[in-house]
Image (cartoon, rainbow, N blue to C red; front, side):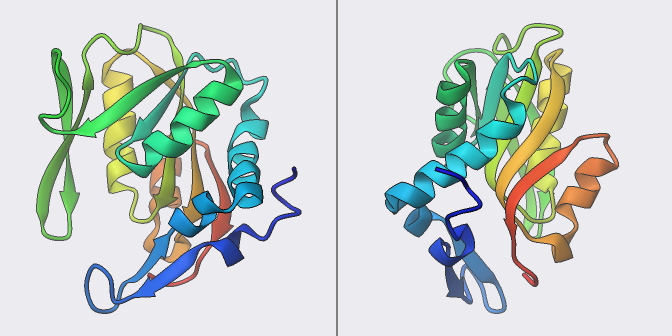
Length: 180
């Protein structure tokens, strides 16, 4: 199945005014429920990295777990979960990042990534890039090297992909939605 043959954008539901007025929430659960769409999305995230020398795929909680786990499986690589603060049981390292309404923290296990490991970061959507930026910092602080960041959806008007480019991170996305 080729990602170009399936209209992934059509399979993504838009929920207006969620979680607040003026926001157009891009819901991938409808994409995940469609077998051809699900396969096309995973393939689209995997194919550019088949020969990239990836050691680990890291996914950001929660939809990044779904997508990143599938990508890691297809690449035959390990998966590193990046979770909200307090959710991992062993020693962690954390990274704060800004939200519209304050500061949040994500964490990984301190021993999850060995020095020099090549890591692909996967999540469902890149908006402002705050969460992805924090995840990249965590991976780098762990000694990992970011090969790229891959997302199903880009919201280019919010500047997240451009933000990651300033950190010398290549960004791969499957579809774009204008606006918020």
